[in-house]
Image 1 (spheres, rainbow, N blue to C red):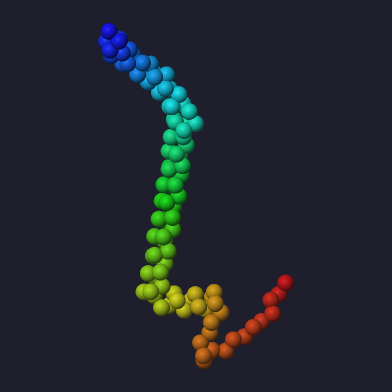
Image 2: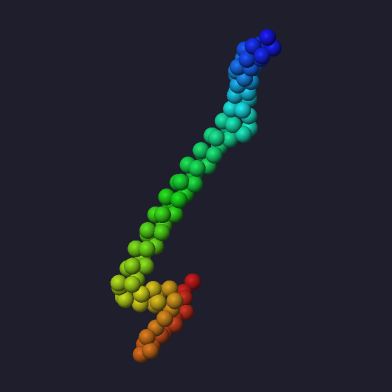
Amino acid sequence: MATVLFERLLPAFILLIAVVGAPILIFSAEGLPRLQSLEQELASVRQENEQERRKISTLRRSVQRLKDNPIAVERIARDELGFVRKNEVVFQLPRSH
């Protein structure tokens, strides 16, 4: 008799725990809100990764241009680094204010 009662009440008890426990787990801080937060974070990281991929692509093109074009290298050496050739004379003029 006790075994039959146990066999009938056990499924009902498990169902009751599931009905009560599932919403608690879903809406707790570690449930659905955490999932939504992680999905937003993932979207943000993906967007940032895409921006970084574009930057890398641009830098690779710049590097390739510098490898292929010695004139571009000379221009950068002159304009940005102030280099001159051995046979050139440099005149420095005062800047007017």
